[in-house]
Every structure is written in C-alpha cells, then in structure tokens.
Image (cartoon, rainbow, N blue to C red):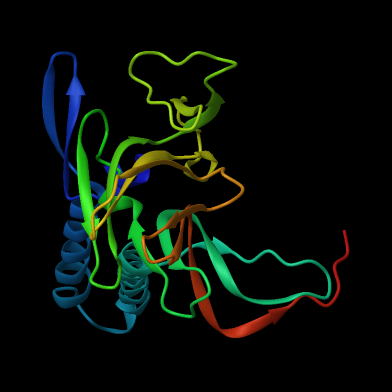
Amino acid sequence: DVVRKYFESFWLLEQVGPVKVPLPGGALLMGLLFLNILCGGIIRVRKNWRTVGVVIAHLSILVLLAAGLVSMLYKREGYLRLFEGEKGNVFTSYQSRVIEIAEMGKDGAILQIPEADFSDLTGEKSRTFHSASLPFELTLSGYLKNAEGLSAKMIPPTACEEVVDNYYVAERKGAKEAEGNLPACLVTVTGTQGGEPKRFIAWEASDAPLTYRTADDRVFTLRFTREKWELPFDVTLKTFTH
C-alpha cells in the first residue's frame, strides 16, 4: 500500500491535521528526474574524452529509471511451490487475488474477477458481474481487506456482520505485508433463468471452493484465491539441501 500510494503515483493527497495537502508522487518525480538527466547529462553535456565517465554514469541512471518504469507497469511477482522430485509450471502471485469461476467436469476457460474490480465494495456498496458464458450473475459486496472466519454459534456477530450458513467473517487489522492478508467478500448468485438468489461468503483461507448448482444440474465452483499464471516451461526440483 505504501509503495502504491507514494512511489507508483503521479500525485497524492496527504492528510496533515484537518487539511489534505497535494504532493507529487514518486512516478512524477522519477519522470522529471529522467528528463533532467536526459537534457542536462546527455544532450547538453560537453562530449569529449574527459566526460566519457559522466555520460556513462548518466546513461546508467536513465537505464535504471526506465527499468523501474517497466517493472512498475508489467512485472508479475510470485512463487512456485515444489517438493523434491516434483515438476510444475504454474506460479502464484504474492499479492494479487481473484475470484475464479469454473464449471465442474468441463475443460473450458476459468473466468476471473480481479480483486481490484471489487476491493472498493466496502460497507453497503455492491457491484454485479456477468458473462455470456455463465447462466447466472454474481453480485459482490462487503469486501474486507483482511478477515477472520468465525462461527455464529460460538461467537455471536455484531449487527453489521452478515451470517451465512451459521458462519460470518469479521474484519481484522491489515497485515504488515500485503501477502499476509486474508481478504473476504459476500457473493450473491442469481440465476438468469429465475430461482432464489443464493448467498455465499468467499474467503481466501477457505479450504474448499464454493459450489453452485443451476436448474439444469450444471455445477460451478467459485474460489477466492491468489492469481496464477502458466509458465512457458516446466521447473523440476531435483535435489533440495538445507
């Protein structure tokens, strides 16, 4: 969150007492620094054998700044978990989450709703998602950045916490590192052919996916999980030495 707010933004509003003060973000400052070095350290600098080192140093800084921009816009950071002797080609994001929707028994594409598309749905806000390939719509609401799953029978919920199948999720303080959070949200599935809407709690820490059966006996799974990508190669862990 700190990196996104201060370093990857062009400008920001910082709360100073009762007043919000506009400040330049890291992306804007790095862009101005790039132009400054390009004009002053490359274009206008005297070019002779005595300034070769200066030009090389300035070019190096420009390359670092350009690489930082590419990294900010396009990088994907994650991990591939393997035991000794295992092979895999799918790596998992450290921070990026999605809601995956797939039909059981089918080899079709897995639909994804990125967390960025519903992470603003706190409080009473909600948003509906639909796809031509799905016989239902999803309405997401009640997003919690870091949540704890609790039993309503053991710990009674407060008035603002909705209970689904005798369970609910309560908000927890955000983890110091974003990958330590366990987000959750409420999901309402509404069939396009009618029928009663069904409510679920989607929580990243859930062991099993949510399942929804349509009127024509098609079964779909919904899972709140980390985003995954398929590598164009396999990785095999041959030997591990502690």
